[in-house]
Length: 228
Ligand code: DX5
Ligand code: ZN
Figure 1: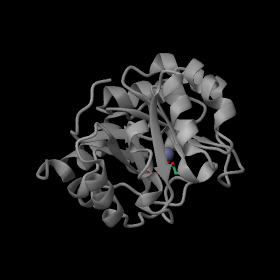
Figure 2 (figure 1 turned 60 degrees about the horizontal axis):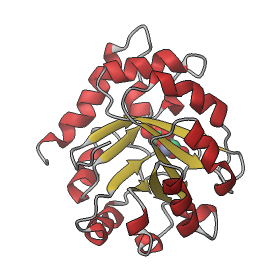
Figure 3 (figure 1 turned 30 degrees about the horizontal axis):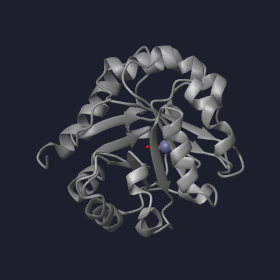
C-alpha cells in the first residue's frame, strides 16, 4: 500500500447481499472501487451484529485492492491477531472502545497491519492528538455507528482541524457514514481522502446489474473532481 492523498472510494459491504459477498466484492472492484470497507459490529459497542474473523478471512481472496476493516467492537485487543490472520490491510479501532488506544494502535502495527483510529460524532479531534504518529488513518464518523443508510452529520470542522493536526504525516482521513455526491465535496475540500459509502454505492445495483455500482461510484468521484 503506497500513500497518497487522491480521493479513494471505499464501498462498505454492509450494504451488499450478505449471501453473496464474494461476487459483490468482485463487482464493486470491477466497477472502480479503490478500497473495500468491511464493517465489523459486535452488538455491544454498537447495537448491531455483522460478522467476525472467519467471514473476513473468507472475503480476503476476493479483495484485490485494499481490505479496510472497521472494528465497531469492544474490547479490541484480544481480536487483533485474528484480523491480521484474516488478512486485513487496514485495521481501525474506535478511540471510544477502551482506555488504551495507544496500546491498541501499537499492537495493530505490531501485527503487520496499517492502524486506523475512528472517532464517533460526539468525540473531539483532540482525542487522537497524541497518537497521530502511531496511526496510518483517522476515520471521522459522520453517523453514529451501527447501521448503514443514516443521514450525514456534518463534521467538516473536525475534518479541517484533523487535517491541520496531521500536517505532513502520511495519515489518511477517512469519512464514514452518509457519504453521497452531495456530501462528499464538503469533506474532501476539508481534507478527507478516503470516502466510505454503503447505500450510495449499492443502491439500485446488484451482481447482475453491476454497472449501476459503477455509475454510483463515478457520481461520488465526479462530485469531488474539481476540488483535487
Ligand atoms: C456505519 C458503518 C458504515 C456504513 C456506511 O456504522 O461504519 O461504514 O456502512 O453506510 P452508509 O454509506 O449507507 O451511511
Ligand atoms: Zn464503517
